[in-house]
Length: 126
Image 1 (cartoon, rainbow, N blue to C red):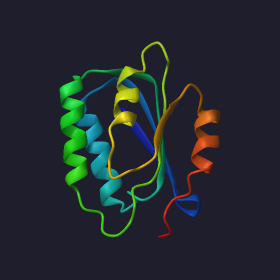
Image 2: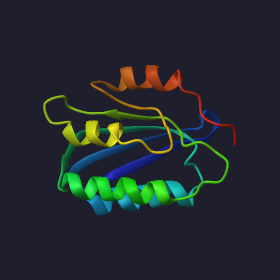
Image 3: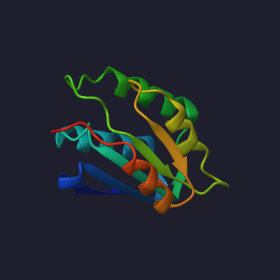
C-alpha cells in the first residue's frame, strides 16, 4: 500500500506517509483501515511529499462525500494535517479544504510545522 500507517494510541495520533503513485483506491483503503481500527477521532498527519496523485479532483470530491456519510457515533473527527510539496500539493490543499463535519484541517510544508499545529488541536477522548 502506498500509504504507510503508524498509530500512536497514547497520543491519539496517526501518521500516514504516502509514496509513489497514489490512486483514489489507495485513499479509500487508508480510510477503511482507519475506520476498522476505530480511530477516526484521532488526530492525523498525512505526509504526501513523496506521492504523486493519480486521481482526479472529481474522484477526490466523491471520496470526501462518501466519508461524510460514514457515521462515527458521538465523536468528532480528529484534526487533519497534510504535509505537501508546495509546488505540487494541490490535491492535499483540496482535500484539506473540503469540510468533513467541521474537522480542523490544514496543509504544511514540513512535518515539524504539521506536528506543532496538530498538538494545538487535541483529539476527542477514547
